[in-house]
Picture 1 (tube, one colour):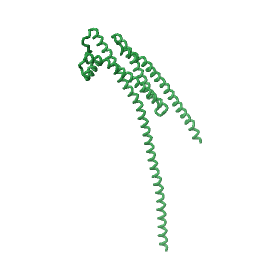
Picture 2 (cartoon, rainbow, N blue to C red; picture 1 turned 60 degrees about the vertical axis):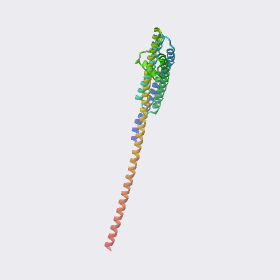
Picture 3 (cartoon, rainbow, N blue to C red; picture 1 turned 120 degrees about the horizontal axis):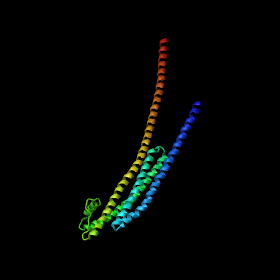
Picture 4 (cartoon, rainbow, N blue to C red; picture 1 turned 45 degrees about the vertical axis):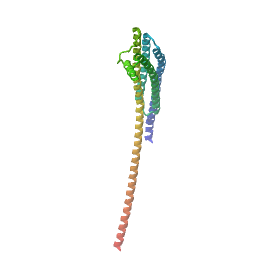
Length: 276
């Protein structure tokens, strides 16, 4: 009894410490979740500012407007990308410090991961649509300047112009000032396209990083389950060996007494025949 009285306080102390750590871990997780959600809320606000800036560039007809709208659009876009990067970094930090055995914490991390990837996908769709419209404008200008070009030649020509591998074209018959404005418009749109497509690559990388974080947890769970299965299997094998051992001992004892009985019978009969 004294043994149990000595052990109970330690057990209760350890249990209380575990519960305190669990509550603390959950509180930290929820605080980090709110911080990440605030970061993503900033993204939503900035996307609302980005759409009219994109449309203004699409509708722009002067060099000054082109330049101003593109700079504003790229500034907002850079802030959005920074917000996504910070959100992903906060998630990675939370994932690294979180207790992998606390299912409530892991559920929160899964929710945050899904939310980040969902918002990244929404922004990717927005940027992809804008990229398509900008390319369409450059293509129309290229087709006007190269009326005899095939569809494949136009495709290749547009790519060359966007990435600076071909001199910016001019339309035959245009006055020098008009031609200069046309070239400048194409240059501004080409620069915007390059920035957007670079952001699309970065978005894909961020989404993959978030997915990898979740996948690591899934692998960890699989390893734990596999380890539990192997432990159970080994335990069953150990029980089987123990059962066989017990049966072997029992059989050995049974045969021992059976052999002793036979020896006694044989000795008794030999003694009786000798005395007779």
